[in-house]
Length: 424
Image (cartoon, rainbow, N blue to C red):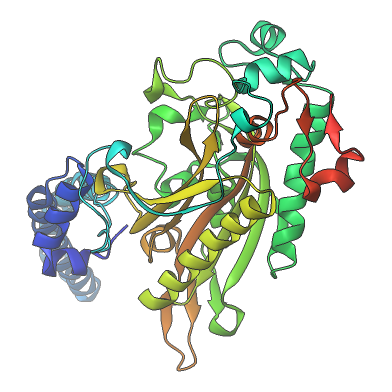
């Protein structure tokens, strides 16, 4: 959420943000509602003051006839006040709806574009595997590799969990835990506090992080009026909601594991087979709260992205980093990078990580503040980044490490967890 004072003073910036993000938002409507809301609020406050003054007068009246006239006048004022308060309530409701739809301002370096096809590559790392030089064979896709090694069961997964259901089994389950354990250890060494975060989360945290109302179609809603989270970002941002931190405690650096759930309602017909686009998966998320300074946000954005890159490099997975275009940003994101790992069977890079910063968009909604050295209260800045997501990441891992005979070499960094060098 943006500061309404900022919106009033910079309507053209909000209009430009909506255009660049390809979001349908009418800033004029918000400002019109805001003006009406303030006018009604002023009237309500004046009428409440008048009501209090009349009450004081009635208490001092001794003449019964005068008192009755004053009471009748008070009843009329009370009815008018009730009607104004009803109007204010309606106006406040619409005002809040529009405030939650106002887009954050993207950084000037965010490129133009409507979809992820217009994201711009900024760097690559790693040598692409040359399978033709390894005895000359065409790389198999992850589904064939895993099924041949009895590491996955899609048929029974669909039987039990429906469309996009799956079972990881045997070495695939061990490999998934190995990747996550390696990721956790890597980030804890960098000073991140480890968490296991809840996936069943109240609505306030989804509203606070911007997943609601924009992403409502992607979220599972339970009968108990709770929601299933698609990332630990949601619960970890709720962790400090309604708190005032000390500037000395910043930055807060968290690495959180959680099961994740997404409906994938907007991806009909995309990646319907395999492990790329699933309703249920596991993810480790980096979350940072830092001081309210743009350069500080930029620094942490680059650092978080580099952390994920170093994990890929330690596993020797070729990747590239892209900066997301305006149309591929969420409502609250100022800037976002995607990291895409190489998938040999598709001969292209596919997204495995994303890294974003928000300024105070989320913390203003969640009321996460800190007291600085001069005693002033500020809204913190927030950032998040995918450290690893499985089983999606296993696609690149097994395909890049496959051998001609269908076996899979275990990356050296993961061998201590699996106790073997090759899966065959």
